[in-house]
Image 1: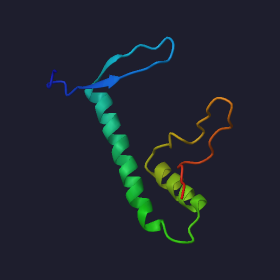
Image 2: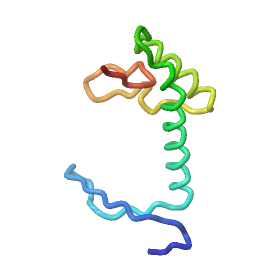
Image 3: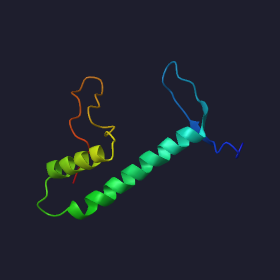
Image 4: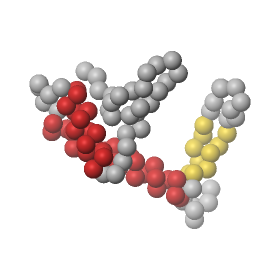
Length: 97
């Protein structure tokens, strides 16, 4: 593996028709994007943790998460996600108890 380029090998498998299994090499830029998103997700959880209290609704948590995410210049990947045959997901986070 070429450490100079800071690439990693990610083994991926797919059974879907037309898809191939194989090794995907990520560039330094792609890795940095993944790290940045991971840091944002971790920071969001840290931000929400003290807000999670008895009596706080999942809608309140969602609203806080959406506001915080937008303040970071980001957009939730879940917001508007539309699986086949279903309406778009309207939340910024998926919360269950």
